[in-house]
Image (cartoon, rainbow, N blue to C red; front, side, top):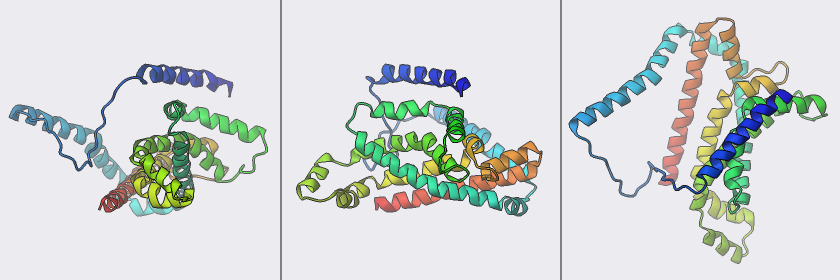
Length: 283
């Protein structure tokens, strides 16, 4: 536990310096889904060729070549690899299914409570710089010194994911939350509408895309997390990311590549569902 304190102190020092340096700056955001008129940068033919070549090379080297190498390394052993890791896949889906709704709900409630506070930016920024190893060591120390009721259960991992990824959900809602006009909430309170009715009728429809984005992004983080899962997982529990790491350690590269492709396909499936629901909500 003591060995993680210097790393934690350094993380807070760097994040605090950046926060105080950037807090008064002005920034621009880009919304690719905006229905307003867009401005374009017109390029000469030579600049277009250079731009397209750069993007093509970037995609080729960062996506297509690794994917091709995974397919070649897999030896098309997809079904045997998936069958051998069936338990790990179900464990990952279980943890994701429990963690993501809790993290998303806590992220929304945290934003709703602190949206008018000057500490919102700090509440988002400071936890993001804490390394997962520090959180894992802290939880291990907690589980080993105190009588915690969740010891030996899947909730050990869920708590780790909440501490690790809650700031990301809070950050997402800080971008979508301002779409809810305070005048609408005040009008609902004047009509003596309770919080649940106001949330269901006003807040939820206007922040629906924030909930979708949080669910999608946090799901990807949770299902791909290796370090935190390996550190705090109960005995005998193995998630898909840890299964891939174990197979890599023992040199079973065919199954490693096959399960990696399966994980990529699962993420692409989540992204497709997110796009469908996002566009359906806009219409």
